[in-house]
Length: 128
Image (cartoon, rainbow, N blue to C red):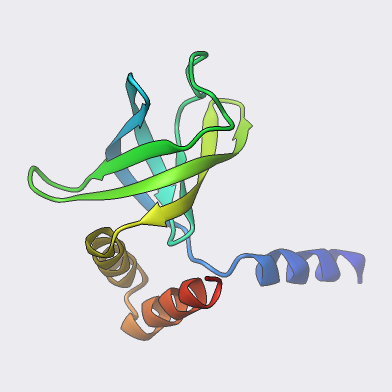
């Protein structure tokens, strides 16, 4: 019964689907810029394949651009959620409307369900 409870609790905490997505990510904090590889993304944040460089201040915002094509990107401001091994979890703190539209469409295409993507977007909006 304990294992079921733990699994149910983990499911309840995860309100947003993670989409495995291979893309290049540009990150910036002040004058410091670097690149990383995206592992997955959700309406709440992203996971990159890289530890933060030593010069990055974990307690300050980081600007992220996820390059979808030559002319399209998802831009957001993030904070560091966690680091484990060679991966860093970043939590979205602000995102512009165009980027939300691109991200919603990406999630919709990957879930194959427009209603599920809409539910996640509504859940995100209810958090604010």
